[in-house]
Image (cartoon, helix red, strand yellow):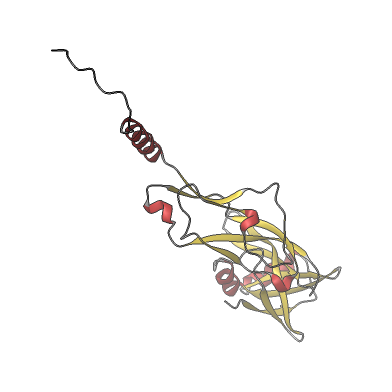
Length: 211
């Protein structure tokens, strides 16, 4: 999905200037990169639509900057007026090709785990991970197909299929998703095991009365 915003350049800054921008339906922004910060403004309605579309820190956005063309960026910070829940200011971080960045990637599961149909409980434990990678290898969301997960199966971070450039920043090797045995399933297994043990040849039979 393409994410684009038109940016008007601005040279004046300050509280009064920013207030006039907001009255005109614009939101002040900064584009940060290479040790510099450029000021601009974007349409408030278009910005709200973009923010509510579900963008993440890893979402690449194209800013069409007045007089400069397209610049690819990420959202660094969105500031809001708490009393009215209106966007006050946005900082964008300019993409530098080949330079690694640290960001968060969402994890979404797809399909119904086989083990769920057998009475197991499916648990999605980790919904996002921090990674260090080059912008060219970024994706918004990592999709896991859990269809083949049986009862007792799990997917760990080390099992994730990710680009070679990704360095996943996590302690240990935690479980991302699993199908656990429920109490009912455990009780059923114990009952079946007990029944199987009683049916084995040589199992002790009840005493017979003598004639």
